[in-house]
Length: 133
Image 1 (cartoon, rainbow, N blue to C red):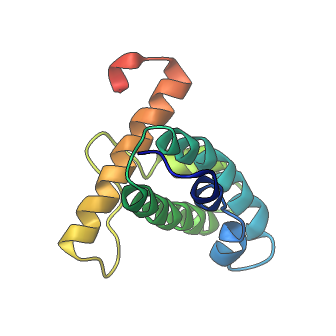
Image 2 (cartoon, rainbow, N blue to C red):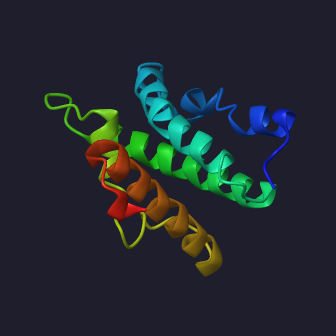
């Protein structure tokens, strides 16, 4: 069952994510770029008829992934800044996502599931390859 219009609006509300991830003010622009990369995937999930609890779990996992991507970007040498897509994609694979600090095995599996789905979604966008479904 698809979320109601109000639930969908709440699900797609990513306002404040970039600011909450930022260590310093200059990080917000990078965070905004990551949010722009995540939004189409959340919209895609919302259109799949998934249970609202599943959608919320994916959204929570995407919040963690986005924060991790921004952290990784902040650690890079300023002489060679990475773009948001490269930082996000470096965390994703067909097998799993990044190891989460202080996560239970169940939380890690859930995060890996979201990361795998995001990986396949981004591959389809980049290459138009339906085999990545």
